[in-house]
Length: 265
Image (cartoon, rainbow, N blue to C red):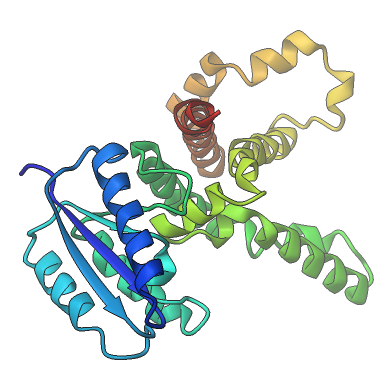
């Protein structure tokens, strides 16, 4: 199917000049940036909570798979997340099943690496839930139960403060990539490199990495050693899971940096 774009334009109150200005911007963006000349324009005037006939018509046609792309000035033209985040996510997730969403006001356009990053995040979440979230050895290292509880809460806060833990949808990725924390997305690989360091320290009984020669450390974290550990039946499952996750995280972060961030400089 050749690309065909639905363009949705909405303003809250009647303002012919503003509506026309946004319309011209959207059409120009569709033709010159997206390189799509086949489009259908849908326009509403009013709140997202009110009756929006053109929006409903557009969604109906999107469900009938008449379009490949949807262009808006900003996602809040579709619905405002601050009104109802769950409703906003449901609408966006539904749209995302049928078309590729574009926004004039969001700097980054769709890239396949975004889908890859989201897939890796699913695996990261599984690993986090299985091995890290309910870590018992951290609290067990404190004899005082109050101190253990406080430090466990600090760990929970730190683990959940990473920007990738807040990303659930493709639109969340767009927002993150446009925020001042966009380069924090690239720390996903570093996080699991550090996790691997910690696991290796226990597995190889390393008390202090500074006491080990640099060549030995490089050998320890080499692809050859990773391959050997993955193939060995004696390697604990957690180490294998962490190696695989680290390699995927490192690869997708590298792709995100070179294929998206560097292109926009």
